[in-house]
Image (tube, rainbow, N blue to C red; front, side, top):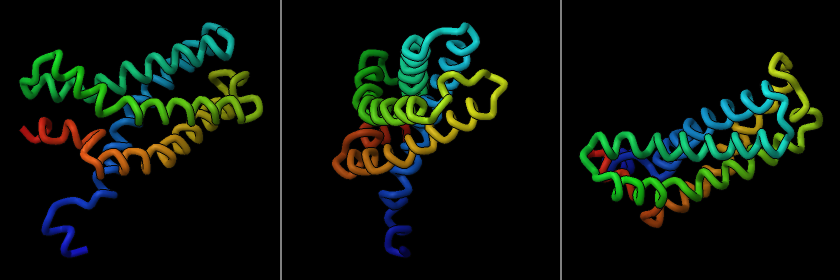
Length: 154
């Protein structure tokens, strides 16, 4: 452990941070999409499509903002964000939407139901657990959030 501290954060710590970063953007999009779809009375697939689209939008924007703020050109920043986040967001979206479909009654629960919010929170937590080893694997190979880490440092 002491040896790792001398060389910076451990791979697990970096992967946990990247997974949490990705989950934050995904969660904002997911929650917003599920709330809008449920509030509008949309069907399961329409609600999930909106939630997934917003999860990608917010997920990528959380990576783009610091890159653009650091002076990276838009085209390069988009390429970095897509390279860093696509696999992680995809895994999270498959898992959390799958969990929502598997929890009995979750997709039919209303915004005032504990089942709706509990299922959504549980789905996002499971998505974090499943995405963590994916992010760890990517970072260990110089991919995923490792691609943008050098730009965040500047």
